[in-house]
Length: 235
Picture 1: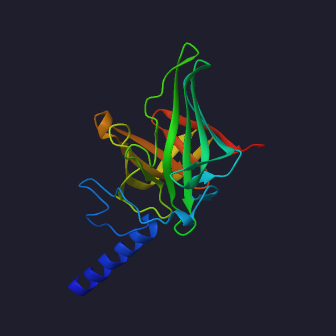
Picture 2: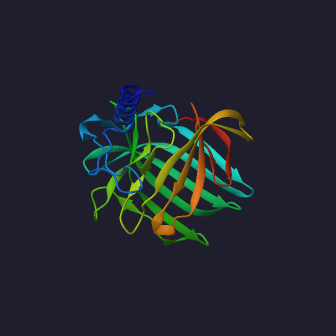
């Protein structure tokens, strides 16, 4: 392969990354692990929309289960202004044996330009014996040094690395796209070409866990949890 062809390929890859994540990778917007700052104008962000792997439309629900544990993710007909951006509120409700374990309200916005979904923070209620006992992991972009991260790029690139949460000392979730064609069998159906993302958090020791997403559906596997139901419900 000639130098000219190699250079052209590098330029093309750089252009694709810019289109997907909002800015070219430079020392100013990444650390030694991956991209952590995104060239996004707040005026281009919306609280409603969807890309192939992430849906922000009121009434859309994903239900995942693992034994007697259930995780219900609901896009609420509700918005919240965070860091000057109108975001969509997505509730995650986790139960075990029918008892509440955790409820979080997550704040997302989608770019009209790149179709990437950005994460602006979350409120967290952790339950024990029916009572809220903690709010561990809660953060908001624009407060205490926290900044929004990239939850799901509009254009996925194999081996791309980026931060989903940037809240120093609280939440620093990182994501790496490791596969674009992962097979998966679930109670809700079988999928051949799932997007597989490996996540890690240096605040919590850096251990890794995987999530799988199916096009047109969204999250279908989260650790041990598999999707058992999905679709739009009445608002």
